[in-house]
Length: 282
Image (cartoon, rainbow, N blue to C red; front, side, top):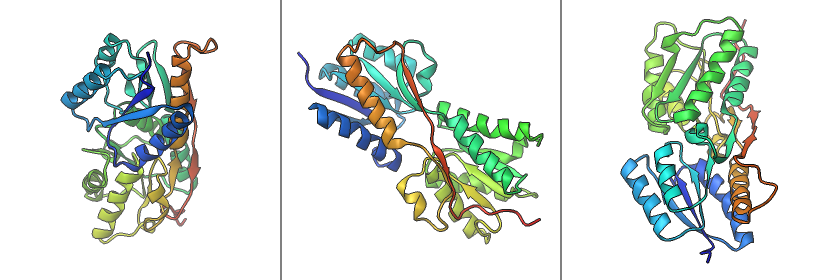
């Protein structure tokens, strides 16, 4: 007695990252004859609880969750409705018996940091997202690992966290770095949207990107190629994350005998070099 409807929970529907993830999900489900029940969590625990409740009561066949803040306790609530779920880039990946698709964020930030070192940068800062959960932890770990391998100091004043992963969060957080006596020559931003705000704040402070400070993002949302200057970033395969998660969900629903439980698919992206980074003059 299937409904042929899958629930999809994202953090913010308007975020361009989730738009591409949804594109991948919808392409798979449309072909399979499934509809979507889409909801946004907005990082609100009560709203998340209500969304979970509604999806369970409406008997969706399964739920795909692309929201970094969904907790193990909330996942157990879905279990009570006997609804299977697949996670995308979720911090609850550390829980056992989880079907998941995620991007290797530590690898991505290692690639960015190594690239900046290759350009001659040594004063490299990390502008993170305090609400980024596991994703922020892994990206910061990748950044720190490369600096340690290069025997460069991990300066506490070069690591700052924005309140949100938005342009506003990036613009506010970069002010801490701009107030330092010794400015970083490069800043790795948690995502492209924070980089957009950081670049604007740098320009408003009378400095130039990349001549004074090189900036990188993460995700490679469509906007990244069209801001000024076009953003060097790490391409996270957003469409593929959604596509693989939806395909995994269908395999769970169809009791695919080849599906190993728990199964986690790890995807790797690639560095995209544009004009927001520059080699240091020696």
